[in-house]
Image (cartoon, rainbow, N blue to C red; front, top):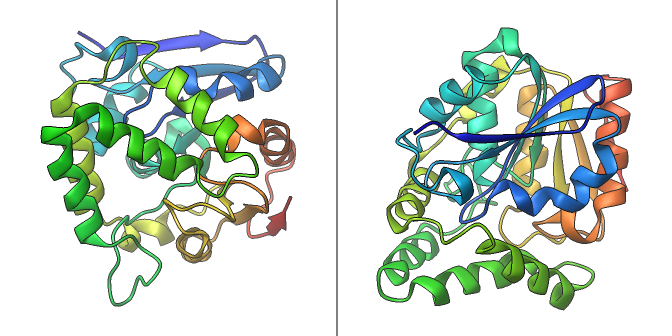
Length: 263
């Protein structure tokens, strides 16, 4: 079975959007409603998630990037969290199809290293993978709480995340395990200088999953813009969709490279 890719909007700018771990593309709905008049959106459900629950496409970033690129026109790509690794691979592997890149609360390397001090502790990620085996729903709920933490209205954001996460069915356990392994093992920092694309690395200043310091460093290495949303956490398209839409519109209409902005 192929990937499920929903098309929304009728605008002249084509965009591909890729969600994060344990989610599906329906999570973007508040942002979709703000941009569908200006954009034609290709909303991807990753393998093992949402309407792609039975897809046989491998979840690896390169394989997913290839599968998506075969089924969408040239477009701007936006990847949120885990989806950012896939969007970045698309930019590296299918340059002719990627007009610009938005890395939303995403990072080229998730875990901490001596030369990557803002990454997450490897032990935390491994503990998450271990608890997933014994407490599937509880583990996902704890991760949702972490995503909502730091938001200006964390309780409301958590309610939205909880209501949406299983609205297209439960993500497959093996897909969730693969996703955590990808976050543990992937390091694309050496490829950052190859990007130099229009677009931006967009961080939530209060993000507790991907530290803004990672994104600022990645944007500089990639020669790309950096934007920081002062009051947002890890899921800015929920509580701060208008501000995020503004950042996207600014770059879509005037794709300068190398700026830093705050909203």
